[in-house]
Image (cartoon, rainbow, N blue to C red; front, side, top):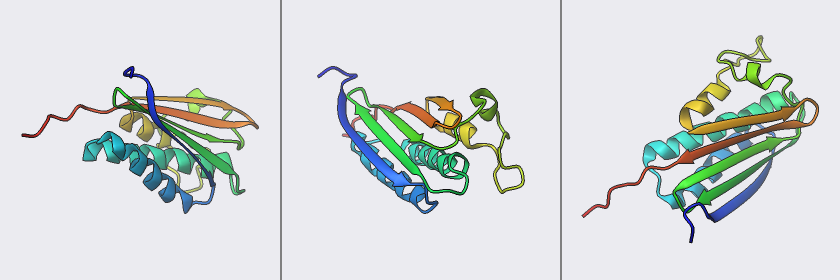
Length: 150
C-alpha cells in the first residue's frame, strides 16, 4: 500500500440545523479516531469541523435549511482531508472573509473568527466559493507518530 493511498473514506450529509453541528463534530472525530490521533489532535479536528459546519449553517444558508455534505478521507501516511460543502449563498470575496474579525453578521453574536480557528487547528485550509452556488472548505492535517510504548 502506498503511503498516500486512501485507507478509508466517509461521506455524510446533514441538514443545516444548528443541532447537527455537534453530530458532525462527533461523527467525524469518531471516524478519524481509527488513525489513533493524540487527544490534542482529535480536539483540533473536532473544533475545525465544528467551525466549518457552523459557518455553512449560519452564513451559507442564512435562516433557511439546506444540505451540508462532509467528505473525510484517511490516508496511509496518517494524514486526513476533510471537505465540508454547502449549496448556500456563497462568499463574494473569500480573501476578505478569511480575515480575522470579518463577519457578514455584525449585529449578531458572530466574532468573525471561524476561518482563523480552522487555520489554527489544521495544517492547511482552502476555501472555494461562488456567490449563489455555495462554498467548499477543504482542510488537511498530518497526525504525529506516537512513540511505541514498551
